[in-house]
Image (tube, rainbow, N blue to C red; front, side):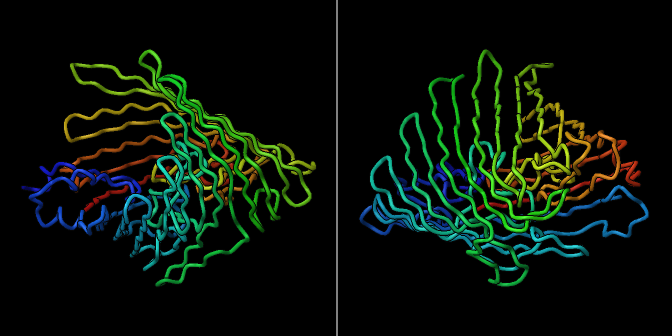
Length: 435
């Protein structure tokens, strides 16, 4: 049996959720299937797996300026290996190693390289069918990932050292948790951990009543020392109150979210918010089904650097590729309109999208996906630019996938008035193998 013909195995974004349960009943397992499910007796098992991802990434005018000397192409490798031990119906232990390397890039970000690290290492105890306790290091994704995500786009994922208590029933799930983000270092097993200068905790609940009536409701508290926004650096303490409405109705799929933030930034009060809307439907053209949709967001920025209130929204721990792998603009002080179309003929998938970006406030700057100030507020212009992107994918089988993403960003008046006039071109090719 070839790997592309295997049944009973499906891979999750987080590999602790791989579905290998059908292998438990299969008698005649091949070598690979025996690696995925080792019977230990007494309803216990051990599973192994991992992935290898290769990427080559290229920029032209990465900072919208042909005058800057920049690396124009680099190569990224990410190898992950995990083991998952289940002891009866109550205990689980999961460990995952990560090795992320990069060559030919001059200015490295923390998310580019981590030669060897523990990406995940946790123990889980299941009290009964509804309640479970997790303690250890874990990748975390809440809801649609707008505020807390795995950070799958960059080379190094985001991990938290955390404890969580989870409740799950047929229509209701609730997670109460506290976590400290792991601070990535580029070397071997040298990451900084349990640095309580930054932490997040809260309660995240999901209620599913009907196909068109599903809600997430949550309260998240984040503290971060020495946070830098456009107006300066201070300790940031903020609470996020959010609600998300998602589902489908009469052929429309929707995913809408509103978040309000309050707290303190040094001596200033925090009042910030975001509203996000995503509506999608399926159509047919020449007997080929495709999806067409639109996303739009308003994300507050600081309205007056001289008053006693900070209005810049903190997206907490969003995905690194919030608007594609080009990753120039992050979700703070932003208005965006993002129509797209995608279709999947056979094993191919194609997505075409366009994004227009504006500053929400002329008094605040533009931030990168890590929410670090990238383009300070140097002028009164609001329009940031246009982005046109494509993603073309090919799934050879459930183990091997190829993807090519391209992006063009045309500077708007805000960037041009800041001396950044040149069109940015970005491309990234990805090959991923999962086992």
